[in-house]
Every structure is written in structure tokens, then in C-alpha cells.
Length: 337
Image (cartoon, rainbow, N blue to C red; front, side, top):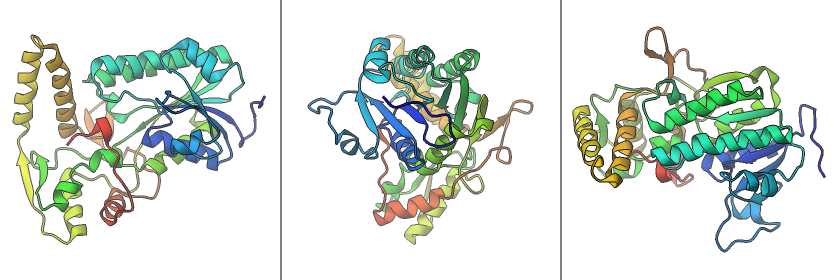
């Protein structure tokens, strides 16, 4: 049985959420830094565990893969932790859609089960990937994440809570439409919001460092990518420049989003399936009108200067790689456009 290490390198890490884009990048970053990584993932129909499971799932070859149900405490203990020692629990787990039921089941309840299992197993440190938008929790998934953050802080377990700004994949939804000659959609004047986007690999390296650096323990850490904060209009202008085209924009009034949210909310009181669609519309409106930057609680304003930066790859570097076919935007259920 592998023994937990107390040194700076070579720690034993239990990783959940490992098959998402950030999770896979985090597994790579942890393995590259010499850590012993055990990834706990959902069973895949028709796929049996084997020595090549990591590679088949896009994980580093040296990572161990265990299959089970993260929402089931018995599976966590029996299939995941197995009574073995680990130094750190790292969670890149998040609800897939942001719908209220999913959010509370995954972002809150499953994390409570993880924390309980970690404490029972003697794991002394949890690194949690959260989101910067929980500063202003108007949506179900934000409230669920924030509720678990509070539970983690109160638990007595050492914690590192990382709140990143926008991911590259969440800002890539219009690349194909612009490449096909269509205009870039802007809400309002295109300068309502700003963010410091961060790449999967830059965020993953930051998370891996959190496993090692004691000065990051028992802290809530907002983080963004390199460079100045950028607005949606600036994103569009940069993409058109990369394509060698003159910028073309179509402005969508925010009141149109308000009307969609209001209509779906009213109908959702009668037709339950529309209640979920109303929440998705609220999510879209939130990201159209709120910046992904540190929020100054005193002024109620977003502060780009107070939003720390890390990494080296910019969103515009990523756009260039997308256009060259060197990257693929895996947006999944979190797509806004």
C-alpha cells in the first residue's frame, strides 16, 4: 500500500471531477509535479477497469483510475478511498447544467459526502475548485457552491478554495459563427462586463501548486488569467482581426433576456420542465450582465486590478489555436451560446 508523503513533492492525491476538461488538465499537472494521483470517476457503460483506463479517459498514463459513484458515501469509501492514506482531496467536480436539482445534488450534497469521507479517512487538506461568481449568488448553482464553501470552512479540515474567472471554453461559443461570416452577438453595448479568462492548463497548474503550498491553505483565492481584463466587444474585435475580417456586431438588448426569463418563469409555475429552462435563461442573463472579476463588497463594483492573474496563455492565443485547428472547444452543457 502506498504511504502518504509529508514532503513537498510526491504527495498522494485523491482527485474527483477528473474527466472534465479542467479535471483532466489538473490530473496532468499533478502527475507532472510528481504526485501519486488516484482519479475517482463514474463507471463507463461497456468499459471495464484496466491498466489502460487512464489513457482511454484522456488522463495521464501514471494515474490510477477507480470507478464508483461520488454521490454514494458507501461507494466513495469502498470503491474510491479503500481505507488507504491520502494527503489531499482535490475536487474539480461541478454540476453539468446548473439546474437547481443538479446543482444541489453535486455542488453541495456530493461535496458534503466527499468531505465526510475525507475526514473519516484522515485526509487533512481539500483543494476545491469553485467559481468567482459565487461572490454574487443569484443562481441555484452559485448558492449550492457557496453553501458547501461555508461547510468546508467550518469543518476544521484545511482548505484551499480556488475561484477562477471565465474559462476559455465558455468564451468560445461564437468562434464558429464568426468564422462562417456571421456577426458577433453583443449584449447591450458589449462593455457591460469584463473578465480575465484563464486556460485549463494555467488553472490546473495553479490547483496543483495549491496541493503543495501551505501559504495557500485556509484561504479563498480568486484567480484570473494573464493580461488586462477584456470585454465581450474586445473578444469579438480580436477574433475578427485573427480572421482578417472587419468587425461585425449584432446588439441584443438585455431587456430581451429579461422578457425570456420572465416568460419562462411564469410558464414554469405550470409546466415543470420550463422551470429548468427559466433557470438556464437566468444563467445566460447573469453572464451577460455580471463581470467575472473580484467584487468589492464595499462599493458593489467589480475590480479588475484586485483580480489576481496567473499563467501565460491568453484567450486570443487560444482563439488563434482554435482557428488553426490545434485546439478543440469542449463546451458541453456549460455553453452559453
